[in-house]
Length: 225
Image (tube, rainbow, N blue to C red; front, side, top):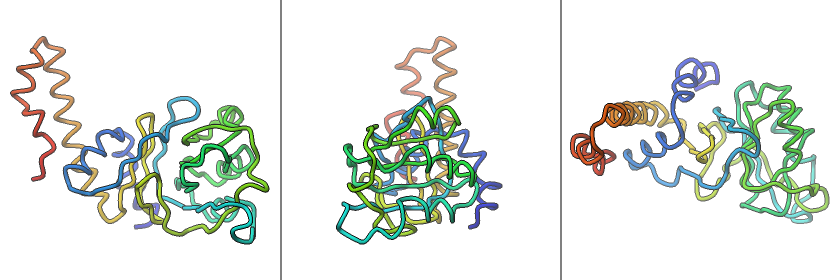
């Protein structure tokens, strides 16, 4: 699936769904290890949707540094893509900042999702580039970490991410949707959201939580079909 097809068929539908809806759908379908906790917006309540362009980080000196981290991935990104950086949850070493964010914004990238730390989030907020990460630090990456590879399989937390997989990140966390499962997952999430909205309307109308729970069988709502 190319980005044009993804945008036409799925981007609008994913905009209407929270990561919690999508995580529930993944559970219902038995698609494991695709929800990531602890990676959240570093400014505002931004939401990032797109196909993954991946970067894998490692310690400085472990491999030769052929280019500054992120440059290749950004240059080869397409509008709507998401930069995904695997830095193994490192909260001490930054691997994203203002210059990279501006370069990504110039390419039309939707945002960055980092399993690790970032910096310059105040500057990113000024020009409106979404940054989702585990933490924020002032340190430069130079002399500390380097790009090991890009456009390779990586991980966010325990979730495997392949180049081209679908990423959705919001204030709740991140979900990784295998690209070949996106239609199935989105359809299931839409059905779950519809039922939850019915439950909310019932509660707003004065129905008790016990009655709503019984009527909608909330405990078993995510059972596999």
